[in-house]
Length: 389
Image 1 (tube, rainbow, N blue to C red):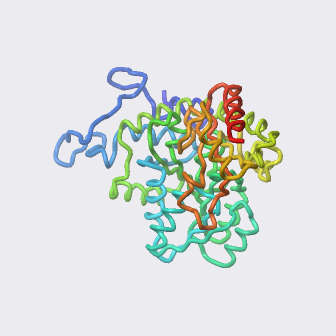
Image 2 (image 1 turned 180 degrees about the vertical axis):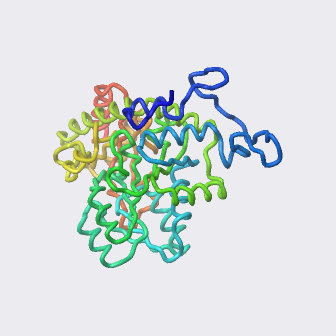
Image 3 (image 1 turned 30 degrees about the vertical axis):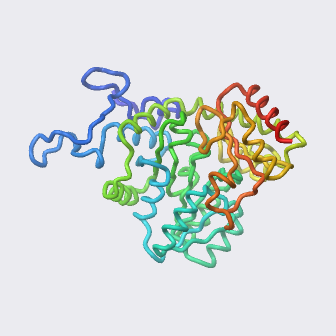
């Protein structure tokens, strides 16, 4: 009997979609296909359509099926990194002369790719506060855009964009919306249901979830876009290795459990830090004081993510000392792994946007709150703040 996964809940789809037991042995976990090529049953007679792993691999196909089911999209395509996914999506659907409207608070690597690679290619780039619907409306009235690029929550200022409102406005102008849903994950937020055209992920983060694999993905309901992306994916070759895909399928199976623990821990950390004199501001959409809290409550479900950003009252020096003084939080880039990480965006993940409109405050610290005991995490932050005085 074939299960209708559209009638099941997310946790069930995460474990079973694309994960049918092996037909030959009955192995509950599908085999890992560590092969670069496949025996053909005759010239041009491919067995189940496979000829070369750049073009297709059963392990990668399993991950694509699993992710599409969780996201609620028709198609998912996995890549070797989040930036590879972004690059292929844009190169396969844009041409010189097209324009992109970008949020002024996005991952530094995304801005670097767009400004240093796509702008010289002839793609126009404008930057506004995407969380401000009036600013988006003004930009759309002034220019034609192929895409509006949204991060919500954004990286690292954790601004919240009303995806439904921005998508409706964009579609009135014939503009498509891409949402980088990495911070929320498909557990907490479904941009396609809110009107977005495409969703991108750095699957390195919550989807992989264990800081042991780099990957990316595109999810869409549009067949034409899927075909264009798949053609360039195969032609350019930015595909994940089979073992990387296998690690991602493993990560997806526990995604809901982990993300809800990340979110609960992050909320407790944010509430604790908000009351301390050493902290100038806590940025976390789960706090009622956050300007995007009401929108986040409406479009995020089951939590607000595991990232908390804080600005320290002592400025840059205090921020650097704080980042270097934690014992459980590891000083490292990235986020979304089971372990807690701490970083100074201005000098690390967002160094590439220094001197631009995307420059981040130098007293800002980004915390990726893991799934450790939350009391231990809070104690570690307290001792680090004390040492940073």
